[in-house]
Length: 278
Image (cartoon, rainbow, N blue to C red; front, top):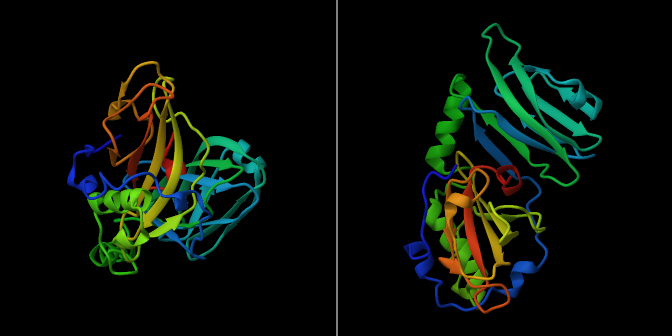
């Protein structure tokens, strides 16, 4: 659900509105850091967990846990290790559809978490850290991360990230891109997906960046291509997925095959694109 919307006339895009066409570097390969950690704050909403098939993913809970899982998930799990420090190491041996998994703390408090777990052929293997206000250490860590903006000590909002993404795509020279320390580019699957309700627009992710902080923020640039016979107004209410904000480069696209039939949306989320998209 979109919490707020930025329009293409917002200040976030003014700096790049006349900078030209998309930079060719956007299609080049991505080099990501060896270790990128995602933080998610438990707020009584099931946490989406995507498992890459055949690759181990670590999930850190604030205490030692036990897991109650459906038979389908158990049968498609190659390995599951639960450590006393709250770390869970999970490897799926084949893809499976999203299933609800219950996680319980081993102490006498009765605290629990809900995971919506899905395994895909290709997905992020980044460590996921679950922060929980009900645990003193978790609250302290969360506050420290919020105050510092993450391990790098930087804090950015949605306008900063959208401006940064737009400059990376449209600036004719890298020298015109204002760097944001701590913001790193991370891989994203670039195949078409049904991001819009209706069949007139095709969506394909182009690039994704991750910013430090709690919750972790991601901004993804998504190329939109029109297959319509008439101009299409870009209505954010037709977006599918869970987004904090949606910012179009242009307010509309022209009919298929005509100049202006493609544009870019900048989608802000608290989880990686593949976990926020439908």
